[in-house]
Image 1: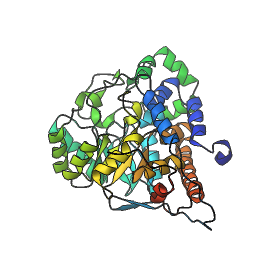
Image 2: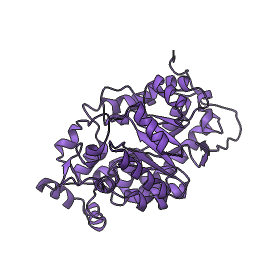
Image 3: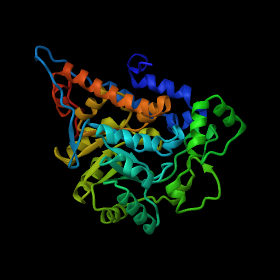
Image 4: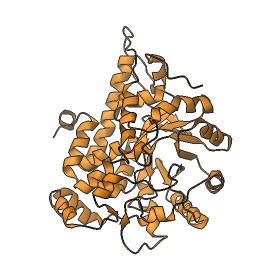
Length: 385
């Protein structure tokens, strides 16, 4: 199959993912919380950003390399953390780590992955980032960070926007527990998706192996009450300072939406902030992530690293985020739609799609560097005052 012809866009991979994974898996990867209005707002905000095409500029040869936190990346995009990746497609964490190493882009392993840091870190080469859902017990936190560091992860991402569990109504209706506790309906769904089921048999039941190594849960829990949530803290500024003291490498805080928070993080030694509304999985009342990005940029100044996620589906969306103040963009759901569609082949194809779309749109805009996208905006970002 020529994926360039059959699946030229992420939307095609998403449609194939839905056809190839069981229904309860689809509900996990695709759902948000509440009425899922944040997903709609994210998409609308991105679509509202337009650029002026450039003419008579001669030959344009885009250079996509991007420097972030002292390292060169082949593209201005990386792989965001997604919990339970191995539920979406068996072996997803390992496959995505290998892809990141091969493509020269960051891969972020979640605390609530189905594989241990020791299994995944070596596969990511020098592209390994580790995402921390902060545990209450400081000794557990220090041990997790030790294990991540020894496994080769050099950048730590602390997710800060989970003060408590969300409802995630679609996941509840799907009867999803973690680890999965099968119902007759789920068994039927699995029978209709034999490739996923056979691969799961080969890889084992997806479990939160890292977190369960610190806590015996005694069975399955609902999808917002699993071992990761049972151990998780509701962090404050003192907790963040403790994490900063525990981690010697670059530290990123994910889930930042307020300019004042970003400015304070810069002042207290955080190396980068990650503007994100968790794509609506936690709070349905949040604004589109893109709409707060210009004000966050104004608060931290022009040279402080800003990372962004929030509904990105294409190379053009990446340029939109960069034009509004981001230095780097992350995709989480997108890579997992691709994994669900065609496994590792699908994820590699998504990198190809993003690269080609970046080049195509940069040529139309007459720019050679992704960071120059703001110069071609048809209208300036909203006022940040």
